[in-house]
Image 1 (tube, rainbow, N blue to C red):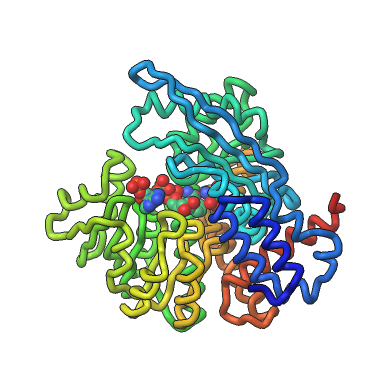
Image 2: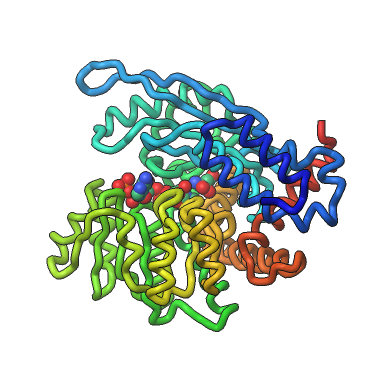
Length: 447
Ligand code: NDP
Ligand code: 2IT
């Protein structure tokens, strides 16, 4: 699998040490593959065990989260926070509430977050957390009690200069608000301990939009660099949550027509272009299923099965739902239908086989670590504003976000070129993200 014997051995050790964690293995394999040319030039990374250390989380916190539902029954969930790497700044990364959450998923997310955060150019380390709690169908009061119990334990381990959680799947402004309230009850006022807060109590303008907007800023750079643009392009976006909604908004502002969105049950297709106000009403206000879109637009169509969205003909695909949502078969369908660009809003949405199909067919491919870094970058801008006790305007935050995404594209592209893999942004993002963390680890002493 690897040309380099050391990397082969290391990958086998990672598999053995972390049994039954396929998502974590997948994320590590992709990074290690990108590092083959790097360690030829930097034997010190092996000599000083830097790569060996980087694949091992600094700390894994795993805890019980008991809470009481509306019927008075005790429910018990499991909470996680994985503090992966703080070589360049406090641990930083989202919290995911979804029934599929387990150690493998939080570990892959924390691992990738380390390199993503490095790519932003801002001083943030990598971490991730979550719970197997399912917010779907729960009352606000149940979500509040769950968040309070979750934070009662988590607050022991976080702080504005230690570890700064934020949102991810199933965690938006409502959940962040409840968790922040509980943190304040236990520790007193500390604005910078969480990001993605509501605007009235220390949140940053544009944080809500940042991942989706940033994805489109990145994609625009990638398209323009290859003689294409969003203008008049047909776009398919999976998911209909935070990232998908604001990707749809920005792609449309760039002149594209977004024709399909989805949730975990199925997808909607609207040949006239998605009516985003309807999607926002269904998802952000009513918290209902995407199928409800037909009540707003009876001329649109609904199909069961979220992966069928990839069979729709499009120029550009923006996967914004979840890991491994694009299989080899879906990737082939996209290629066969003439799709020429894919950029990942979700974390690790393309399987390794899908990525190979895109790369072998000349599809411009923007990997998650680079393409979706706008969310965490704006979280870091929220931390900055909290520290300054000051707020920037929307225009100021948006301009900084835009510049960060332009820089990420430029750095990932130039790292790919420098290491002989021009155009391969997977390798470029992994290498550029890795080198900064590796140098920081070496400089600070490795043990
Ligand atoms: P949301 O909870 O707001 O939305 C998630 C969307 O994805 C929903 O439409 C959901 O459908 C769908 N989805 C979730 N799980 C699955 C699944 N197993 N199968 C099919 N569809 C699924 O989350 P976000 O928009 O915040 O996150 C989406 C992705 O973007 C995730 O991969 C996240 O890690 C990543 N990301 C998020 C950032 C952020 O700032 N929020 C930053 C960078 C990356 P349903 O409602 O049916 O569950
Ligand atoms: O995957 C991600 O980058 C996020 N969920 C955002 C993390 C953050 O700290 O804003």
